[in-house]
Length: 228
Image (tube, rainbow, N blue to C red; front, side, top):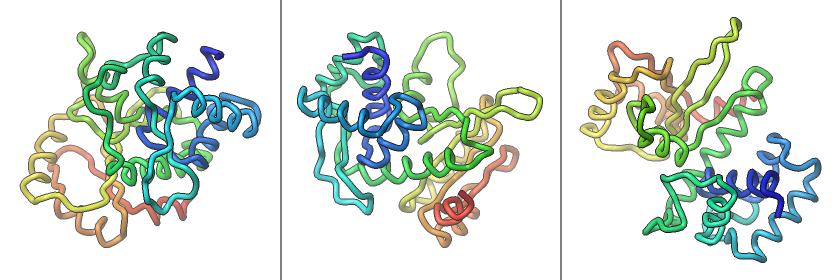
């Protein structure tokens, strides 16, 4: 195994939590992990052969097999020096397959971002990476564990960060009030982007998430994808 290419591809699967075959091919190609999709498919086959990843029985709208890293895969990343402490080979419970639709939809949002000229070079920080960041000593944490954080650069070359939250279903009003209070304390982000699974949900979220001083943007996946 190549610690660079194999390590990066395996880390991509881990950091996505769940990822479809076609999403993995596109994200790996965009990250220049391998020069061709056939080379990536060959690596995926080897990962499956050595039980570093597994195909899960997730029923979703996304085409192709759905992959999840195994404990052996996590152990391999740790051997490569690429481990993160939010999910390790000794983690008591790996993410449930019931969470797969959420993460697959989030991958689709990530790909939509990368397909735009303006955002194609953004750095996408995933859920496991954020959880690791937020529990690392001597690091200024984000106010909450967002679904993702996007690092961008403005026209003056200054980096800034945007939090991303993806909503498939409604939470309670009390929970949205708690989230808004937490986001109001955010010091590390320029704004938080809420992406809803439908336009009607996006319209409702505008009323549910009220942050008097911190910028909140709300859109729907359909609108986002139409613009890419």
